Each structure stands twice: as structure tokens, then as C-alpha cells.
Image (tube, one colour):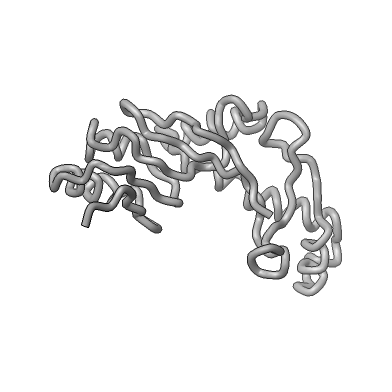
Length: 172
């Protein structure tokens, strides 16, 4: 009857502000969160200060961990589309994973079984993060096999029109 957390599981960025606004206007004072990346501009326009404190898993990068290659991606994306959205950070990885996996095992180009076999041991330097980060496939602990690309999980709190990073995590 008096929840302390409202999880907006899988909420689309366009719908989050409406739900946040409604919950706050109905008197909900607890935490609200989602595991999906959101758009700070959309939250600001749709919910304003009512969205302060909203926690979401962001798009795989922060200024503190972004390499020059990631910064270049952000610049190119912004020039092409007019604005940058945190969710876009995850998109930088897809093609890079495919290309690097094929470079690791060219036979995987036209053999799905070879591609899957390569996923099990694949690991290369992550060009989008500073430091010793690697790109690898994950999923063993959850699914018993490596079939997901690993991207940093950036947990953010929305505050005064922008996201503030709470922490960065990984999955296995």
C-alpha cells in the first residue's frame, strides 16, 4: 500500500516522463528506476523536476571512461542527427563486435557454428573505453553460453536536466 520503489521495467524513453509525472502527481514519493536507457531531454520536457532522482541504466559510456574513439563517435553522431542521446552509446559496439569476431576467425563469415565457437573465447581491446577494457561476449552465468555483447552498464541518476553517473558495472 506504500511502496518505496517503482520499477518501470522496459519503459520506452517516450513513455517514462508520463509515468513519472503521473506517479508524482498521485503522491508517490519513493524511488523510481528502469533498466532501459533514457533521454535526458525527453525527461526534462515531459516531467521536469518531477523526474529528479529517476535511476536508469545508461548507454555504455561516460565522459570519464570514454576513449578518443568514443568521443569521435559522439561528435559524428551529433553532427549527423543534430543531438546526442545517451542510448546511442550502445549502438557504437554492434558493428565493431561483428568485424572483430570475423577478424578473429574468418571462417565465421559464412558459418554460424564457427561464429558461435569464436564467441566462446573472443576478447579484444575495447577501442571505446580508456584503460585496459576488453570487448568480449558474455551470458554464461545467465544463459549457459556467451551470446551477448558486453557493454559497460552505466547506472545514472537524472538530476536537473542531466544524468549523473552513480557507478559503472559489468556482467558476465
